Image (cartoon, rainbow, N blue to C red; front, side, top):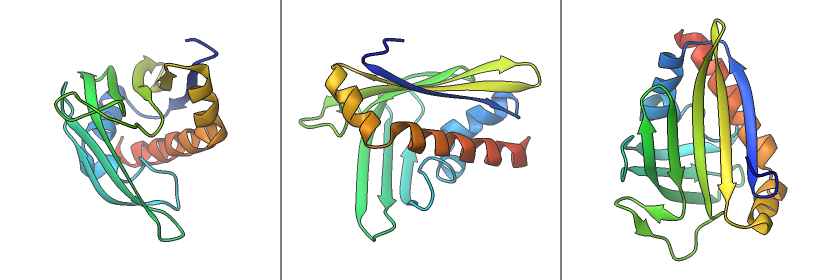
Length: 155
């Protein structure tokens, strides 16, 4: 991890890797934890294979809407999911990405649970600073906690 360009959140989850993988790669589960409450998910599409679409349509508490259309770069079953906002489905480049990052959600078996490591890698330090200042640690930390709560009900 590059401390100047990368941001990271990690949690020890009280669930097996297989359960967390389902939560990461199944739209019906992902929509329940992927955005920080009280933001709502209006639509979510995930195609967990290289080149697959990863789309989220969010409704903000003030009624505003936000859409993020990304692409899956790598999906290693029960190990890691890698995606980016630099491209959309089919590896089509984005003219102006939201953050310009590559995200990785890694799952590592640890004791009776799973270590969840969420990393956002940025090309430039100033992009990481902007992402951090927009609430990366609070937001990604909150969704990690929401994931843990959901996984507890499924394990």
